[in-house]
Image 1: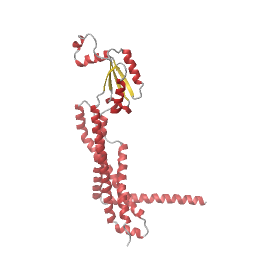
Image 2: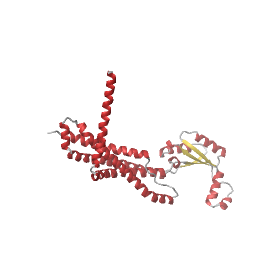
Image 3: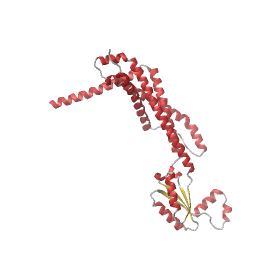
Image 4: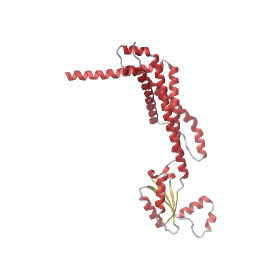
Length: 317
């Protein structure tokens, strides 16, 4: 009987705890909605602060997608010695496929290379005048994704060049190195911008909550006079901060969606000039939920800092 009473009391306490928090959650929403203009202004500033790094990161992601597979950009062209037979070329290709840093090897025989050159160059009659085929067998070596880096491909190039019957190994990755360097700089700029503007969100919400606390100072004094703790008095302001963050995050998602819609057609037109079918990809559902979580977390942090500091200094007179 005693255990049943303890269980019932525990359930009642848990239900009361969540009921109080739910009541505070709804009450804090009603309080900030009672001042719609000020609330929209605060959420709008938060939205702009979140939308800028979010949109830059989205552009960076689309650029990386447009570059395609990095391991394809790091393909090595291996030109065999003219004296090497087709059997020897096939043996070298088989040996390369057994390496752990090689994903695929494609063999282009001298006859295939000459046929492709004949069709693409337009010099068919001139090539007919040649007594023999001047082109060697060629191996197109694709490194694994893990080795598709300037360092990894350089090591692979040196290893292939040391093999018997290999005349030349060509690797043109200078443009990839430059693009990677630029993207790395942009990524760091996005991270710095996101960090600074995230701190700005904390300060914005903290200042808003500070003003709200000053406006309700008398109410807080009365609450403390009847025995309320600092945590109890602080609770509605924390929930208010969360609402500010969620509202600002939602507005940021709308701003980014509008920006993507506005820029999609010009970007597609530019990409078409380079033979690409690129279209800007917007945020997915997961990224949107993550943004709302980050926005709510930053806003909660700002409200907690402001509420903890200022409520602690309010004492009933």
